[in-house]
Picture (cartoon, rainbow, N blue to C red):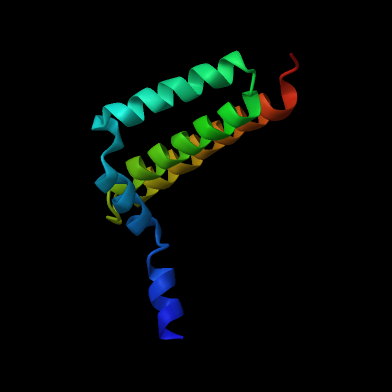
Amino acid sequence: MEEATDWAQALQTQEIIRYINDLDLLHNPWFIGGAVLFVLISLFMKWKLLLTVAISLVALITLTTLVSAQGTDVSKSSDGIFIFLGGGAAIMFFFIYMTFMRGD
């Protein structure tokens, strides 16, 4: 049981955000080139669903990083909640629009 608890500890949001920040992908030229190549291939091959999922995932990671960077101070917690709710609603609207409503 203790092993399961230790394994689940690594799945906390703060641990995942710390892991992503430790990767430092924004300063890696191979990652940036691969991301640009992925976007160009997705646009050229018209893989709109894959591109929408990738953009939504990056937006959600960015939103979570932004909100968690503000800390958990009680006086600022409502600001973080409003930012998270508004940003999450915008990301979900984008995802639903690109997946279901957009007719090309």
